[in-house]
Length: 72
Image (cartoon, rainbow, N blue to C red; front, top):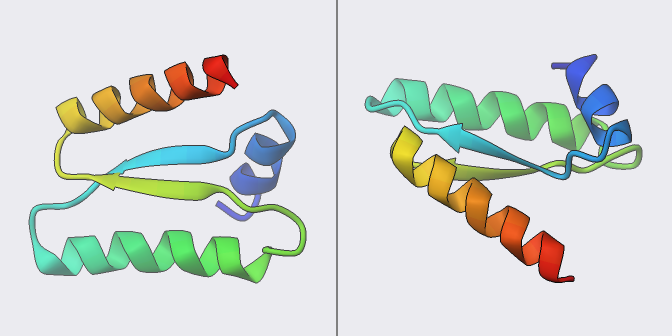
């Protein structure tokens, strides 16, 4: 992620959808990795993470984000 985040930001990515793991340990690990990497480089870039309970919900959230972005 230390290489992916800056490259994604330069390409225009400002939000990523994250499907949460079903177990608590997986949820915590996912949140910790994203937060630590983004916070470490906050002065260089910021990519928002949107967490969803399922792939279906993540797809719906991504569609809504794209629609809102298009309207702005």
